[in-house]
Image (cartoon, rainbow, N blue to C red; front, side, top):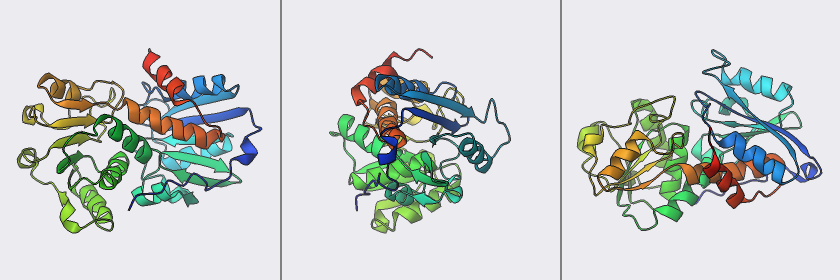
Length: 297
């Protein structure tokens, strides 16, 4: 069952005459994010006064929980916020309505504030699906190993199921997270199409491809999600992280000849969808991609 992305939970018609937008990204260790510049440059290109702030729990709001951060953003007059690690699942209890994709994935990366209500969306699902179809259409997907069962992992997993991956193997350092995601996916597909990995070393000999949906590899979370000695040249490798664009994990995979995909197209695609949700206006994806590629910090 393909998830139908419902962008009509709230009407954006009233926003079409609006020219000032205040948005933000809430997350941990997000100072290298390219999202603010993509949004603000696109807003300027469309003649908008568009502000996009970083609400970084690592550097500015240590100890504040997502409920408080949402309350403060809403009270401060933001039109909406993007949500990233580690709040994509934690934010759900504090929202009024979920889009179809957010409900299916049980993770939210975009929250709109309107009429004293909070509307939760998931643009990661669409962003990953678009990027994967564009760059990995020819790869073998008999068995795929997903690293990370958090909010981003859930979006990736659902996109892979809809992509008709034959068998999805799920690994998370928190076994309960793996179990929870597997249970949700099994409501959509046959039980035998989903498995939980407990012996990672043994499992790494089985998949055609490996996808990193953990934060390990980000500038603020350096390292690799698995020991790179287990990579084989026959693997294809995807890392949804985009800061840095080439993670240590991707560099190691590329060095031994793996087909690889970085997180850039997913980042741009999910930003395009979020911009449209925030403003009610259709952005230029190519222009947003150019801004992403030109980003210097």
